[in-house]
Image (cartoon, rainbow, N blue to C red; front, side, top):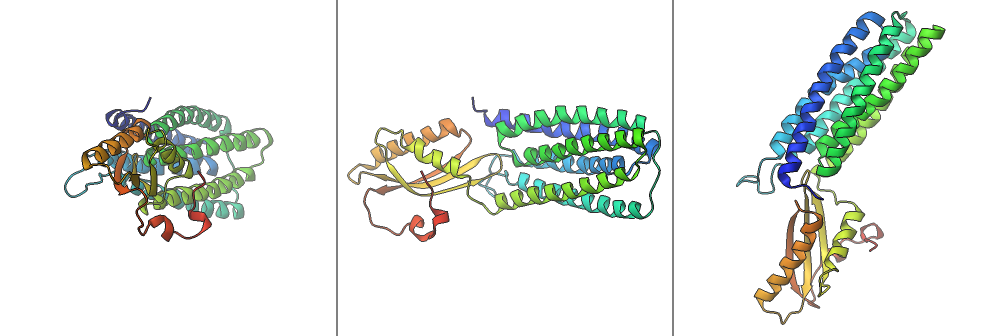
Length: 311
């Protein structure tokens, strides 16, 4: 069952607030772990948690802005504030990754002995369990609301799951076999993975800001939904984009040219209602064309196989 806009907004704010609380808690316990163990891998995870705090604060602010209703100045609403949030998060993740990579290079030249690895293991296992709970909830919220900010935050903490798991492995190796350099190697690997995720987040945020078309699955679904109408009207010049948690669909619908304006409007409303059953929060603009009318179409201007949607 699709959520109402109010339900979606409430879920997004709960998820954003929860990520801040977790980031603060993880940063505190990991700081204790760094103090007692001297582990660069634990330090890298702690720095990532510090960036999580700032990034999650940005997410919370972005979500609060994005749920504002449209007004005279922003008639499409404020949804793209979430894309800006995701872009900032990508920058923070990239800076964290570069810092850890630099520190790892220094430690390879001057190894640092670790201590209290058993305590460090306890800290990281607790961190892993808490992060798993948050990510499961964030993925649920992102799936229900299509929020790019919550999705970005979820990817962010998904990285934490991998990094926490890898740090636990490295601490186990150091604890039982005293191979201290594995800690530095693991930190370097984590930093490279952080940089990769920063690229993915940044790329998706830019796609949203530049109004990149939605997936072929969504576009294909619009054609299928319209075909359910009793008249099965043809459509062309379909354009789609994300407004940040809500979709926008624009297309031309081909109707019998002899229809009066009232009837044509009635049929168009029926098509719009069919789409809203599947995409309840969507903004929809439909232009009515007499069937068979020769005109210059956007579909014909977009030349190339990549522009053709296989229905």
